[in-house]
Length: 162
Image 1 (cartoon, rainbow, N blue to C red):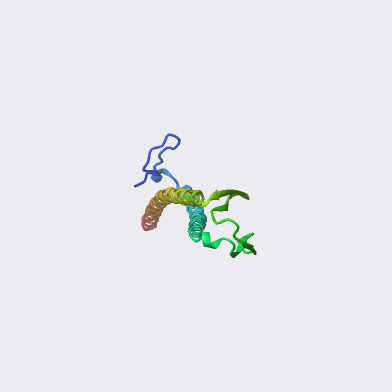
Image 2 (image 1 turned 90 degrees about the vertical axis):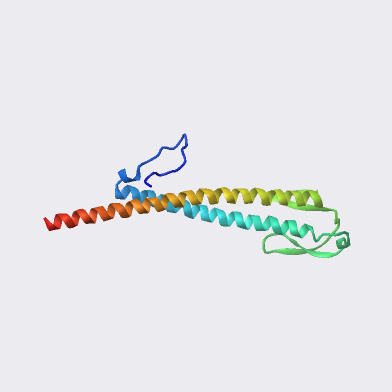
């Protein structure tokens, strides 16, 4: 119960939480709270990226030879669009990140978005596993803090009765 990690790691050492003082436990808990918040923010960002890649892949399915010559709205930013026409229904230009674009045929573009969704999903799963471990450690720290507080109250009560 009082071990900080259930997994042995070469760059980490196990700590018996019962040997730490209350201020040290509080500091450790605050550090874990901060890390858990960071994990939550990362998960939210990854979820948004995952949805973006999924939507982009779904949009590719709507491009057919019949679309050629049709008017569309072309996104310049997340909130600004300009009118345009579909010039080639077999090739698309995709945003591959950091203002870099690539021209691909529909199948290659679809494969790209599928790979990106898979990669982001794997990253989300990794973060969730880390978050669960950190959360478990945080719960253990809280238990040890409550135990120490209870012991202190008992000692004060016994000192008051003497």
